[in-house]
Each structure stands twice: as C-alpha cells, then as structure tokens.
Image (tube, rainbow, N blue to C red; front, side, top):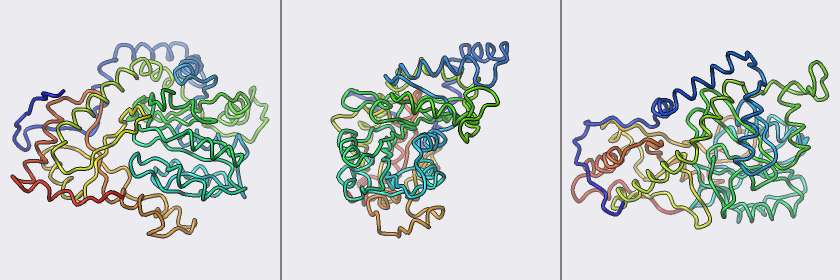
Length: 392
C-alpha cells in the first residue's frame, strides 16, 4: 500500500456508487438461491428452521450464549428495554450523535432519553460525559458503536454498574468489530443488531437480532417478539409481532460466512482512502488503539461539505451524510427540551461530516478517483480551501 498507484482519471470518466449491493449478491448468488429454495420447499416461513440455525450461528459468532432474531435493529432495542420493564419514570442515557432508531425505542417504552456528547475522536459515546447525567432513575445506557468503530466500553460498563444500570450495545453498524480483542455484542448486558441490506451483515429486507448472555432476557425477548406466546394461543406477555422472517434468516446465514472476509476488504479500502487522501485537508477517521474498526461507513469532515458533495456528484461519485441533524434538534424529540447549542460537538459533526463510498468490492481505482476528483476540483495550490475544520 505504500506504493499505491495514482490513477489520473478525467472528471466524469467513472461512476462510483455509495454502496454496491448487487456485487455482493452476485458473489454468493448460488448459495443464496439454494438457501431460499430450501425455505420455499419446507414452507416454514414464520420462525422456521433457518431462524433457529441463524440464531445459533450468530450467537457463536458474537461469543455469547443467546441470539433472538427480530425484524429490525429498532425492534431489538425496544424489546430489550421492554424485557427489563423499563418504562415511565425511568431514564435511558445515550449519545446525541446517533440515528433516530437508537432513541425512539426509549420513547416508545415511555422512558426518557437523556443525551450526552460523543467523544470528538471516535464519535461514540464519551465516557467522560456519562457520570454527570447518571441518576437513580437511570435504568440503562445505550452505547452506540458508530460507523463501525466500537465505543469505549470498559469505563461505560463501570459507570453503569455503579448506578445499577444495564448496558445495551447498539451494534447496528459494527458487526464483527472488536474492543480490546473482544467482539462487539459481547461487551454489555445485551446488544441490538440491525441487518438492513446495507449493513456489514445485511439481509435482503428488514431484519435484526438481540444477543446476550442473560437467558432470562433472551426468553422474555422471544416471547415479546412473537405476541407474548411460549406456545400458540397462550399469551404470557403483552407481546408484539417483531419476528425475523425465515427467508431473511436463511440469507443471513449465507452472508455471515462472508462477514469477516468482507470486513477485511472494508479495512483495506479504508487504508487506501487514508493513503490517497492523506495530503488533502480533510479530517480522516481515527481509530482508537483498543479498537478494530469494520468501516460500515468511511466518514470524513470538512467545513465546506456542500461544495465537496457537489464536486463529487458532478464527477459521478455518490456520497451521504450520517447524520445531518443530531437527535436533540430532531422535531420528533422537541419535547425533551434540548436546544441548539446544548451539544456543540454533535452539532459540529452534523454540519461537517460526509460519508464517502464504502463497500467490500470498491476498487483501488475508484478510491484514487475520489481523491483525484477532490484534488482537481480544488485547483493547484488551492486544495486547502476545502478544509476550514476545527477539532471540536
């Protein structure tokens, strides 16, 4: 990688998608189609054989005892909270720098979300901010492993234990990431995963899972996902319909076999980005020494994001923003009483971050084209005009 080739490509000569799901499918097409056909031939479409098989496989992968397949990462968080009977009068702490689906389950249970700032380097929940908001009402902390980088779990767990609070990992973007050698999903009391198609481990529709080493929690989540039923027509709990579809479970079992390989490809792509963008005044992702990043997203920062996105779009390069509005400024959460300026780190990130194309099959040529497009658009000697970023 130290002698990376420079591809001098004219603007508009390439098209670089943000993700390439079709390429991932084609690499396993025969196995996927065989897995789906097995489900069709058995006809066990709801909580069928493939669901239990995937649950066992994913529990082993996450180095935990229990996995419960559900219909989304949002449902996974909500069912964990409900299984612990977290509700009105309770508080759940998480970060202002996350996606809506981390926070809305807290509200759905009747509890109050309490927000804290992210760490300015990893962009995940800052343990240094946590203790100040913990109270006797705090029942849980949701640590978000954002963009594929794990949160700093040891101090988060230690603080939560002092207050008798549970810790949930929101691992929707971090399948296979590691913290101090330990795999994400095994680091708290429970973890919630999303298998949305664009995730590192993706289904071909909505899907998710809860993983844990607590058998009582897993039992209650299993009941809650399936109408509260231990057996048909016996409703022990006021449950919901949040089951993992059997066909999606079969697809996930195939893709799980490729997860480590695909994560390694993402890390190689990130290393190429770091090298080709090194001489440009973008603020590149940093990885904590205790982390093994899986780069669900490759997120850079610039003070002139709109300009940068326009230049890339004109060159056929797709980008995205994750996320343009922090939680405390979302209209849906206005009733929490937060105001602009309450979380300046989150607000600066929301104004400056942009996600570049990232997927396992992205080529060296495509990454070099992204870098060269920025360099050419900026003009000789003027490239630093796109920076204007101050570390928050």
